Image 1 (cartoon, helix red, strand yellow):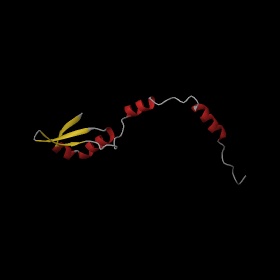
Image 2: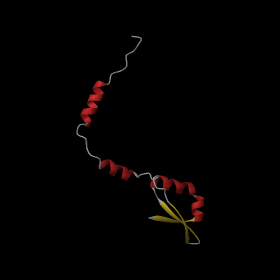
Image 3: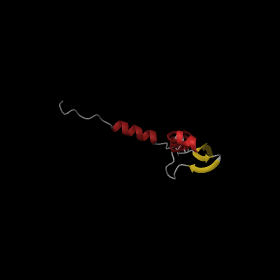
Image 4: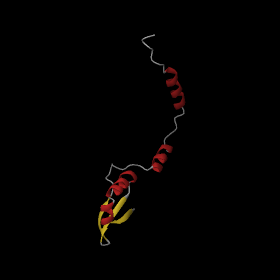
Length: 86
């Protein structure tokens, strides 16, 4: 759904509207004399997901029951570098 704004409002706050398009994926319909004139929308492929969409995507990932075991193996094999001056 697009938010309707006047072209004057868009000109005054263009940076804010571009940030909303970039970061929230919002769309705007610009009007002049209350008549639709243009539409500002994100380009395909340039969409940034919202926090809620990211959380939902992460929640839908499969759970790997062996992940904790893999982390323990990595931590156990991690050794500090030897000091060459000792």
